[in-house]
Image (tube, rainbow, N blue to C red; front, side, top):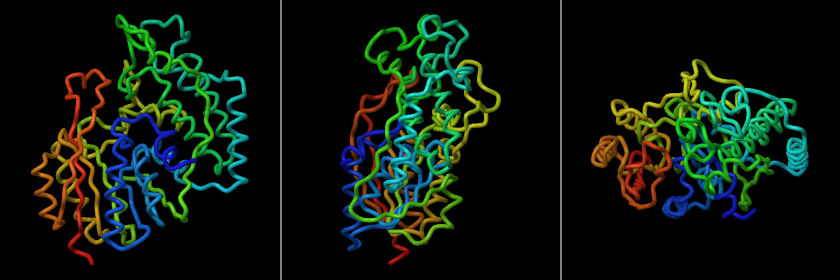
Length: 369
């Protein structure tokens, strides 16, 4: 497994995924290593999401802390950031082979709530996130995973979550599913390559792992970032990629938690089946985002030498307000601006500009040596 493959494959299909920006982020990480005169860092990825930045940081760190408040993110981190030994690798491979080969006939929460009874005869009131066949595959594999030891489970679950994020009848988020004439329809109004991706049978892959040439101890958190800062030791680098708009990951990707927990949440919405009890982040709201960032950066003043903050020009917190926050807390800063193609797949983003300006803020902590 090469580094390039590790940073580009078996990632959750995820809006805000930093895969396309990983090279400029890595350049800043290397510059910070050079400034500190160290070969490897003590790092934190505070909003890990898909985990792609954490994967990259593993190549530059001897200690890595990763955090995300979403359980599905914690699951994929515990899989893809680990370094299983040969006996464990063999057990994982045997389990993957078994799960792919069994007859998929168990009806669970995905069959019951999120897929039609028949792929070829969809009824008006049915939710259509998955084909009937893939729903049976997800439910059966998820049911069987609980029979494996806790040591094996995260690898099997993560592989299932990645495939469930890919072969779904959506344009990237689970707020809704494709329809035609008001009824669920695979691929929506047009039959195209998207339909092939949606209908392709789910088959688990053997997870991939890093090949860095030094050991890296990884510590996992699944909490609000503001809750864990006091527990952290002194770090060299903190990478922050907080939610920047009003579209919360907790509801956009509720399906991944539903599969992980193997049960529907509370009080499902009528059309999409989104549970009411999804995680909320203060960074998603205009009235609280600025204060939350101020509180976070203030709490990190005694915890890290450098911070890389990802944000962009569409964010709730405007550029000048970000600068004001940095100055208030007492960080010296520099800015790298990167223009890249935007995601416009979902209905409420059709009017979005074709490109967005990504801000990479490099903050140096003047409160520590």
